[in-house]
Image (cartoon, rainbow, N blue to C red):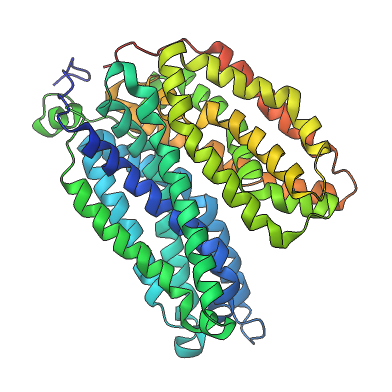
Length: 432
């Protein structure tokens, strides 16, 4: 039984179906993520009462936010990546969307603290842990599945659908929450309205599960493993066999991790705490910027198929090395100022987001491709993405807000050096 065996990739016959199967999970995943963040103001009191004799309630609240947000992402990347490499991409994607739907259904139907006591926040914690696992595992499996489904000259375009799906989910969550909040009273939203998006997410997960069950498997290595022709990879084989590439994934993701959360999510809040931007206008600015960012994805992905991955990555990183401090210093209380600066940053960021799945997939052979992406990517997201807003707020509150821009510049510089070290791989066959 050999460790590695040359395999011929299966011929994908319905590429449109493959695109939909991969994208639907991103839509559901990011719909969940944003819905929880937006609606927490309505349901937090039902799970974590502000005044209660039990000190466990606020503790569980903190654990829920922390664990579900980022702690479980690296674990999900490793576990789900192993499933994708050993049992196939389709198996991992099916498991991931099942977990998403189950977690959504649990949150949507959970009893309140007043009804069942401590069991209510415990159920919420469990659901968020499951969501964290699925979030961490979804990206690697979906990225590999998309890139393996693409023709060699369209991997950048196919790669861009990761963030097309993610931004579509974000916008759907914002639109749904806004529609509910505008049509229901605060009392109704706090009582039952907040549950509607989570139940919608569970239904969308069921639809996505049906779609993914009819997708085509893109890995023949998994069949070779099941049949015993090759041995299955160990969980950390990717790190032992490809240490350079594993570190490159962290470097590739380091700057985008913090810059995405700052520019796509936190920038209006940063403008509010730094220059007094009107918070009530933040939703409109963010929505317009995210639509713009979504529309850019297939354009930038296609450009990378023409000129290569490295040029788009270098433009992204160099743009932030040079432009971060001037853009942050240019923020004002004007809507147009924030919109322009947010759109410029997101335009630069599309140079990474549209091609990241392709770039990372092209680093690893099929045998360890999903785990090679999943764990390093999610470590970078947890370490840098999860701390960006906190670092910004802490520096601002301590009187050193100007240093935050230079922190972002340093991250962008590290990623720029990583991009310069990469070998151009667009148009080449995927490593086998």
